[in-house]
Image (tube, rainbow, N blue to C red; front, top):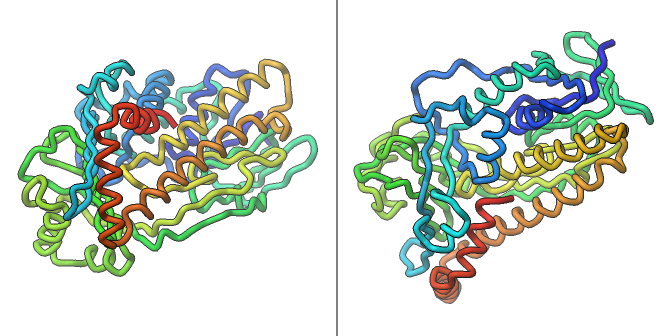
Length: 394
């Protein structure tokens, strides 16, 4: 039987970030990931994230940001949100004096998920205190003194703490009998890349309709955007299989022709949207991070920042307790992490739900309230600053 101080189940972006943040910690880590990142090619992936300032700082600190080619990074300096067939709109710009007070030249950076994961994988694979195992867990047991895993390969591991960073359908969460609160958004996300006639001008755009939300996230190519189109499942399925010419027309119309004719540049993938929230983020010997603990609506592609913030908080707590010689798997040493991250996750989940509910439906009175509310926010410097700060830091 092999031993490690910490076992991380899941080698996605959040699990890898946690391992990278513990590079200078006095602990031995084993990471379980059956499918390591595939070799990258020149094609642009349609799965992207809007990396906020806090996440970018973290990735730079662990040395992974520097491994992503500059031409694959797409800083965005403006954010525009509007409602179709309405005067409701709000606009953020990095030239606003309030934004400059924060010392930033951009609101965030759009980056392909596979570029982030590969960069983090390369970082972690060079760490002396990490062993990457291409294996999957089969059983999990917990005692007062430790946790025990058997792997598909037949190998056995003992550890002080198991961290589930294994996604929305977390095996660790299920095995640990952590109840899950979930709510079906009754929407499906259609994700793909499109080429536009007009340049995106480094602007992240969202347009709300009575039954859908369409986000255009600017890629490194001035005429390429990754779109996340949240709409009823039957409509998403129809758009996924629709003739390409008709699809191009549908996207252009739905986006109010803001960037001219859109032209499909990738496959079209669809993903059911469900808000999930684990009732417990920790148990004795167990902790959850990222999508294993919570999933949110993919508005503007910000979800991974919530997971990175989980990793930063947990890493900080583990370092503190390791330095004190504490048993990092004891639940009392995980309480602060749980309290802080559950609070933040609830805030973001509530905000996403509120936005979706606010813009759902085409009742004339509701549309008027939306228009007035967004317009007032757009003219109120303090309100705009609040929204920007929430976007920059989870």
